[in-house]
Amino acid sequence: MATKTAKPTKKRSFGTRIVLLLNWIAVIALLLAYLAGFLNPSVFWPAAFLGLLYPAILIINILFILFWIVYLKRYFLISLLAIVIGYSYFNTFFSTGRTRNNRNSEKDIKVMSYNVRLFNLYSWEKKGHREMRQAILDLISSESPDILCIQEFYSGHGLGADYGDTISRILRTKYRHEAFVATGNRNLPVGLATFSKYPIINSSKVPYENSNVNFFTVNDIVVEDDTFRIINTHMESVRFGKEDISFVSDWNSINDTTLDYQKGSKIILRKIKRAFVRRADQIPTTLHFIKQSPYPVIFCGDINDTPASYTYKQLTNELDDSFVLAGHGIGQTYSDILPWLRIDYIMTSRSLSASSFQVIKKSYSDHYPVVANIHKTDN
Image (cartoon, one colour):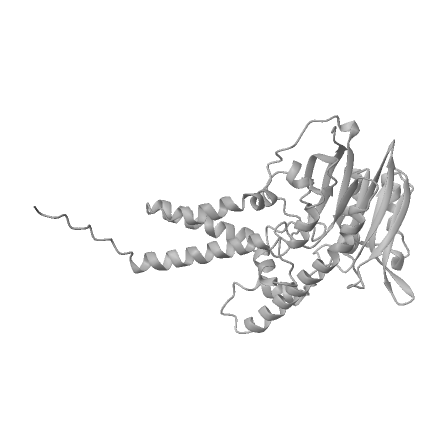
């Protein structure tokens, strides 16, 4: 009786092996990006960097899925499984506002957070300081928020004006708190400002121990029978100079002999690493005021970190992200360099919720303002 011979296993072609290897590298990068939210950058900062690149790494894995499907290979399951594992990360970058509701808007508090970049004081944008400042003021007037938190606020004192007075007049309120960067025996007219149509009963400035320019403010605001704690912050930035931004913008000119790619890359990576570590050191102080608050918290600010970061993860362990609750689409808030950066947030205590969230795509600053309607939950 003749015995059956085993069917020879078909060897993968060289091209298939190369693509499969690249696919595994992309999957490992994606898994490490997931770890960015759990690993303190001071312990393992490369994960934080991969977290910053999460959207790009995600797209690469999606392309691998499409590639294998086209060639009828089951290897598409490798990237698909990795993406499914990190679905919660995907939802923080692309929201469908799954918990959006239709509560009576009269019970909502309209909150706006805006990094105004000193009202374009040094004419970073093509239009001048006065024109951009007026555009920002007009936008604030048209939105007319109940609570407005401004980062990189400039008081205008050096120009013989007070922009705080102007905004108070626009919002028709006398309640505001301004806090400025302290340098030696004087304050620079640069910092944070919180404006409210409701009474502010307590205000304080809380410095970050590892920074001379970054801090946050705490304002307790009474709204009818309720009191809310408003935290307004601007956390450590990467501090890219014009030369750094130009270097990134010119990266496609790979044959440009005037660019030192190795030196430029090292400088940028060093700045990014330092900022990651400093923000991680700043977050415990912020969390202390959130956890110890006797009132529900509304957190506003430019944290200079994406939803795949350690800083964001620590905050959302205590607070809800209004964009995830009620936003739509990608939610980009920073208009320079990378197209997916969401680094400006409005977050709330679990006893509060957002009925709507909007990113206003107006390029009057390098940040877009964010607006949320906040209300108390029924439970």
